[in-house]
Image 1 (spheres, rainbow, N blue to C red):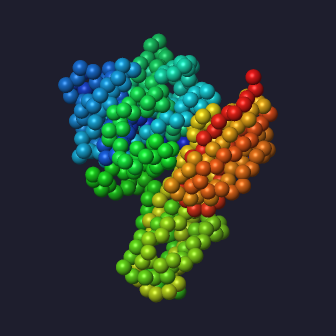
Image 2: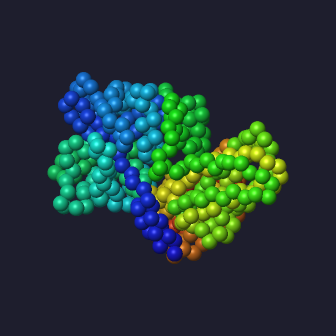
Image 3: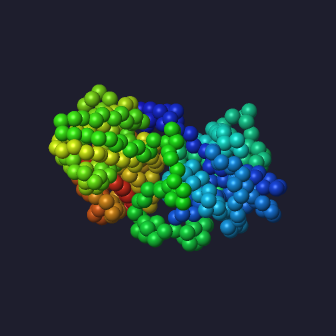
Amino acid sequence: MLKTFFIGMFIYITCFSVFSSDVFIETDMEFGRGMLRQVGSTCLVYTPKHVIEDSESIYISGRFKRDIAVSLLTQYPQDLAVLSVPSSDTELCRESTWRDGARVSAILNSLTNAKLSFRKKNGGLTEYDLIIVEKEIHTYFHIKLSSSKKTIKQGMSGSTVYVGDYPIGILVSVKDGVGKVLRLDDITNISQSVVSTFETEAEKISRESGLVTRKTTPTTQAVAPSSTDQKEQIFQGEIAEGTVKVFNILSKGNTAYKLTNLKQSNSVLLSFEFLSPGEQWLYRSGNFTSDKKKEFGFGTQEVGEHILKISGNRGVGSFSLKLEEVATPEELTGEANIIGHNDIAKGFISSGTVAYYRIFSKGNTAYKLTNLKQSNSVLLSFEFLSPGEQWLYRSGNFTSDKKKEFGFGTQEVGEHILKISGNRGVGSFSFKLEEVSTKN
């Protein structure tokens, strides 16, 4: 059943989303691709060093804007350069697909299929299926395209290799049809000393303490969400006692939401319900007033048009509710959700949603799973399932704001599942998996 769920969700997500290397790069001598990364209020670009080497001018083009002049910040011997985007164009980092690379080792140890994705100068996207053919001990791995009719060409350097929507490295060179890829976890480590100079204090604390933080939009320029970017919506209007306002929310399935009551000058007693496509209630808020900010967390595992039903219970006046999509199906159940020894499973979750992570066991293995303390309090539980989808361990409820350790194990060889459930509230989770003993 779970394997069918994973396959179904992957097909659905693939149809719903497109992932690519973030920018096209052009110099007076060469062209290639690059990956965007937002750090504090700064927008950076990672690209192979040879793409921009000995160039007098460097320009990047994204999905909506072309020929932005950027400057070289620093470069490294691993054929890596970091570019800085002008402060006037930092909104380009809205297109960033950057991750910290924490799951790269587990992915490379478990999977061989991936995609090579890159941006054209006109903003279009191209994506090739590929096979991971060799993994070095660290720093690099090697790829070949699945189709013999396609080739890795000059100018593709800097293209991103993805598993699902999770980037695992950038292409740095090709020889005899085999591409050499610089791992994303190594890119993170190589550039950390420079990147840390741009971090906000909150980002630094989060990185050092293991707290999970959401990617924020650069604040130098206000940008309205596009028609394809529905991660944030505002529901507002006038309401009175005895009246109801109804809004539609299109869900991709297994999606976590945060709804914030934005403080108003008037005080109206409100409540709301979140209903499934079959109009079954998934969440009820209880009463609250429009003059006090308040946050709610809920989610759904169903695909389709849901209903947000807002009721006026006393008084008359305005209301304004902001809906944020804090975790998508790909983030909660994506193909790249694989963890191994010393890896961390982290993200956001809400009541009514679940996250799945695959764990490949060698058999007769004992594990310790540590709930790493977060700043928010979400009620969680988890199950550890065998390759035959039988439960081997159930945790019971606990909260994300208190460190807690769990012990369990398996005698079976193969793909196990860690199923994390959100039971109340909305916020971040972070679990560290350790093998405390394993089969010799």
